[in-house]
Length: 189
Image: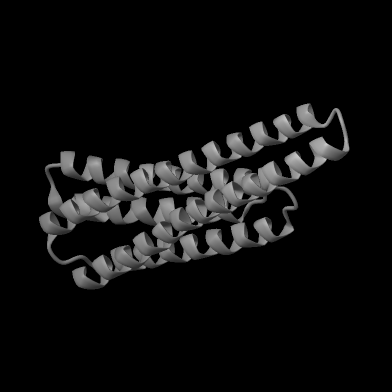
């Protein structure tokens, strides 16, 4: 049962890593767009006077979006690493887990998949780079908030003296977190 939970968490970690990779790809895409805009800037300066300020504003917007996307990716990776460390420590401490913990893990995985699907739909509907960056930020913040809730439950577990009661409380808390995060992911931003 523990190995299934660890595999599930690994899958979840891969999903979050994929999200970070997407953010990095978006940063590269923005850098490519930045290079193209610089070339267009040179062409426009030869043809139309007065566009330099507008192009400078566009450059600043791209720089802001790149910084925002990089920050969201770093935050998501940090939250993922922290949750993975805590989970591994808990898995070593507890040994085998019951079915309800595996169900909670499955719910969290489903939540991650649904959040990814919802964000993918939102990104397809988004026309500007700024809206895509905002959607990515919201996704990272939701993942960070859900992971922080899981980390809090795990910290309370470690602080408890009664292992049997703590396992039941951890299971219930994780199921509640999964439900809340799933509800938050399904609401429009």
